Length: 347
Image (cartoon, rainbow, N blue to C red; front, top):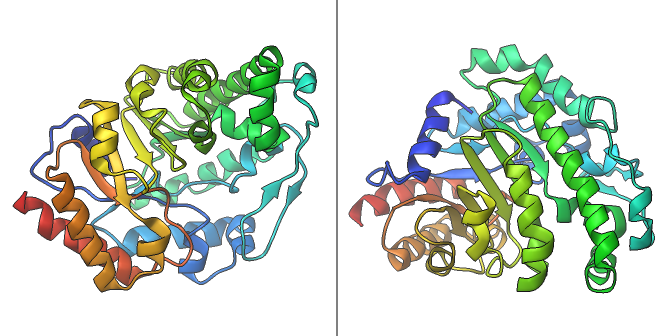
């Protein structure tokens, strides 16, 4: 991400850029490899292929922002790998991590991993270090420390159903599990910041927050996410949850969220009413059904509808309801960007 793009995100999230529409997309391995004409395994295993694919992305679409930009990641396997999970790799689809806990009662036996030495985390950092100079020559810096959220990581380590049962049946051990994961996540974010002083923001991704009720959200999500966002004096906190977001939205400001990326199943108006006026929103065209599977004309029509229905540009970064999925074409991305640039100034 360029410094100019970073400042544009900051200004828009503060309501200081209301007359100029901004588009941005969360982009990583679900979308980039297929779009760039390579396999997922090639993307993960070759630093040069990873760099060239990201370079092609930012050069093909100079008039939008890709968040976080040059994302060094291994899908959902990054954090579970540090806990010792077995990782399963596929040539053209995302990898997954096997569970390491069979019951919530085992939570107390889980040690806090060292992000400097454990799992794939050192490779995440080293990849960015290896390509920091080429990125800088393009005008890009590492601006975000990135991590999966505590509930998200917990669900990988023991399974989503088992985690939900643990919340209801064994709160004590559930909190032990979340305490361990939260401290690990804080350590991981602090290490990224230590290695890249250019980092000024935190990007946290946790879809499992969308699967709990109000009481569970206040008990198992809000306090832990708040602690993570306070890991350092961040200028900008981005929270991604493209599962149901109506329960968590009223607590976004309390958690320290500046920008919220949420499910396309909720309208911008719904989330604005729940989140309040101070939280910026990142959305909200349907990523799979419209942006990936629709025609350019369908993308244009749906984009116009979303802009018209919401009716303003205050603290909005126009995007899709989630990260870019597989099979989104260059034509459809351009149709979205061009429609936003045309329609929003008329609001």
